[in-house]
Amino acid sequence: MGINFKFASEIINIFDPASVDENFKSLTFVNFSSSDEFIKIVLENGSNCIKKPEKYSLLHHLIEGYLYCYLSHERYYLLDSLCDDFEKELIIDFFHRQYDLINEYQSSEIDYEEIIETLDSEYENSDYQCHKEYKENLRTLYEKYEEEFEKFIPNIVDSIFFLLFGNKKFLFYFNEYMSSFISKDYLPVDMFDEHNHLIRIKYLPEWLKRAVYYRDRGRCQYCSRDISGLYSILEDNEKHFDHIIPLEKGGTNDSTNMQLTCSECNLSKNKSLVNPEHYYEVYW
View 1: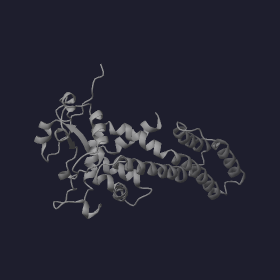
View 2: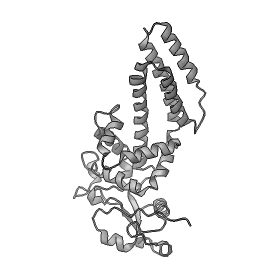
View 3: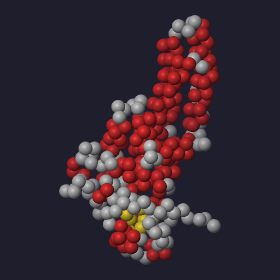
View 4: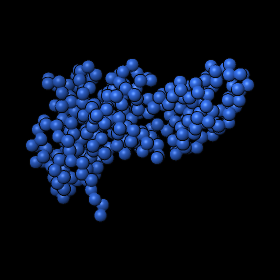
C-alpha cells in the first residue's frame, strides 16, 4: 500500500466514532499530555480557516499534526522497544519499512543496513557494555530519516487530503468530532456570535464552490437529486451550499465542512444534524 493510502486509511480509522477518543490517546501519548492538547494546537494553527474557508484547511492541519505524531511514535517504538531487544534484523526491517514509504518520492542515499551492521558488530565486541552509545547512534540514524521524511510532508499532506476530501462519511465524522472543541476555550472570543456559535460567513469563494460541486457530482447530498442541469442557470444566491455540521451544532466555516444541496433539502434541514447520503456515482 502506498504511503498516501496507508496514512489516509489510518486517519479514517482514528475518527471511528466507536473508538475515536482511545485512538487519539494512542496517537498522541508520546508528544502530548492529553489528546485535547493536540486538538488545541490543530485548532490554533487552523483558526483562520475555521473562521472562513481557506485552501489549506483544518483537515490539512490535522494531517500535518498526525504525521509529526507518527514520526514521534515510530521513534519511541525504535528506541524504547526494539533497541532493548538487540534484534539486528528487526531494526533493519524497521528502517526498511520506513524508507519504503518515502522511496515513493525519492530514493535515499543512506545505507542504513551497513550502518546498523557496523553498530551491531561494535556493540557485540564491547561485550554489550555500550547500550547507551548504541541507542544514541540509532537515534541519530532515525533523525536522518526524519529529515528525509520532512522534506516531503507538504506533498504527503496534499495527497492524503485529496483522498480524504472525497470521502463524505469521513468528512462527517471528522467535522462532528472537531465540533466538540469549537468553543471559546479553544478559539478567540471574537470568532463567536452572541449565541456562542461561529460567525457565519456571507459567501463562499468560487474555488470552493467548484471543488464541492465536482466532488459531490452535482447531486444534493441529502436526497441524491441531480441538480447539475439547473446549476449553470441558477443565480449565485440560488445555489445552495450547506454546512455538513451546522454552526449551531459546533460546525465550522472550514472548506471541509461544506456540501452541495438542493434548495428544498437545505431550506427544510434548518439547524438539525443530518448524516448525508453517501452517494457514489456509477461510471457506466
